[in-house]
Every structure is written in structure tokens, then in C-alpha cells.
Length: 328
Image (cartoon, rainbow, N blue to C red; front, side):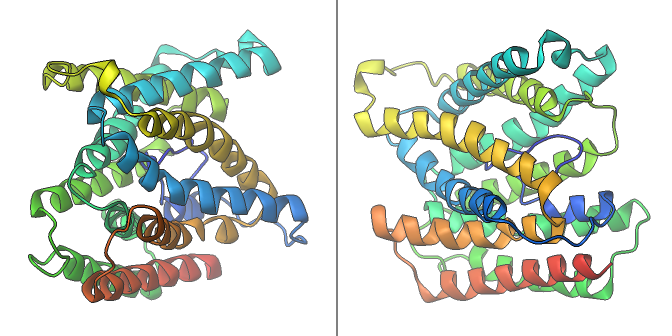
């Protein structure tokens, strides 16, 4: 999950992270009706497949790499590359930001990438990638609750979607139902979804750099540095040798940096200015389906009936939330 800042709806991630489309639906005016062009569908396909595949990539990375150190390396590298591209294409002035804006970007980066994506990476050392993606799909439900807590009034359909999402979450987290999965890992993912939701929700309410790409670069660098510090604090460097990292883990890390944090992000940010937000928000329930299929096909992750039923209920809840917001 990786979420653009301020004007965008989510770590995934890598984090994260943003199945945060529901938040953005309330923060933007409805765009004019327009014909959906080929480039729009192409960009959507990138977001659908690439962001859905990041859960698989994370699972492969942590096979031979420490979770927080690998996440930190990913986000710092991606953030610096993005900043360099911005300076090259738009000039160094595009990276300018006030101290307050930099502080806000750092806070959002900590919430999205350390709290959101970082915890997901840690959880995927014990949780299958498909299950993690299904758990993360509940993010729009948390966003609805946050909006209500701050005085907004989502529609009745949104509340029904929240109830559906939480019911599906209950099925996915009940001990024993999800198969041989540690409940601690499942709870880590749930905490990550809350952190991601708070970060996504707050990013539109605090001063952020005007350039959305620059804001995301600062978020990634801040969140990545925090992940590195947490990894060092956990002692992940002890007993770890680069020689022990497998070729497929290196490949997965490079994939997450280039495709997950740069290409898919760019496609997503472009979509926000080129397509109806209600259409863009559909990634929140397409990504988990992609993640489950890839996990089953490539990693032979088992798809038990409780995971299938619970995941379907969560996705149905997200669909209801998004469709309700579309009519508002």
C-alpha cells in the first residue's frame, strides 16, 4: 500500500496502503461526466493488478529479508527516486515546502508507511498474502467511522457497508476459522488498517506540500527512515547477512520499489484527475481479489471456506460504501 497525500484517497501498500478511496470521495467535488478513455482503463488495470500484487511481493521479500529493514529500504529508495524525478521534470522548486507542510507529510508518512505498511510487512511473516489483503479491504469502513466521529454524516448505505465489513472481519479473525494462521499476525494487520485509515483521513485536514508527488516523496522518505529505525531497534540486523537473501526476494523488493511505489502510484495520481472518483475507488475491492488469486496460484496459499466467505462479505461491504458515496 502506498498512498498519495492530501488530495488522494492508501501504505499497501503497500502499505498500504490506501484502500482509502472512501475518504477521498467525501473530500472532492464530483467530476464532470466524461467518456472513459483507453488510457483511463489502462491506468486502472495497472492499479488493479500492481497494487493487488504488492501483498504477494511483500510475502516473498520477507522470506529472506527482515520485515522493517526491507520496508524501510523500499520506501526510502522509492521516495528519493520520486524526488529526483520531480526535480528533473518540474524543477527543484516543485519540492519546496514549509516546515509545517514537511512536518505534516512526515506524520502522514509515519501513519501510512510505518504504522500501515510496516505492520503489514511484519504480519506477512506469518499471515498469507491473500488473507492480509482481505483484512486490509476493511479500511473504507474505518474511514466512514472516522468521518462520523468528526461530525460528517455518511449515508445509511455507508453504515450498512461498515456493518458488513466488520462482520466479514469477524469471520476472518475468529480463531481457527482462517486455518493455521497466528492470531497475532491477524491483529497486526487490523491495527495496520486503523493506522492507515487515520493517516489517509488526516492527510486532507492538515497542511501538506502543494505538489502531491513531492508530498508523497516526503512521506515515503519519512516513513522509510522510521521503518529502518524500528528495524534496528528490534535487532533485525543481528544474524542477518545480505548473502542469505534469495534472488527472488531481491526481485520482489525491486518490483515493490519500481512498480508498487512508483509506476502504480503515478497511474493512481493521474487517475484522480482523469476519471470519476467513484470509478477509481473500485481498487479497494479489486485489489483483495487479485491478491488472493496470486497467493493461491504462485505461493499455493490455501483458500478455506471461512476466508472465502469472510472476504466476500468484506468486499461486499466496501462495494456498498463506495456505491453509497458515489450517489452523494
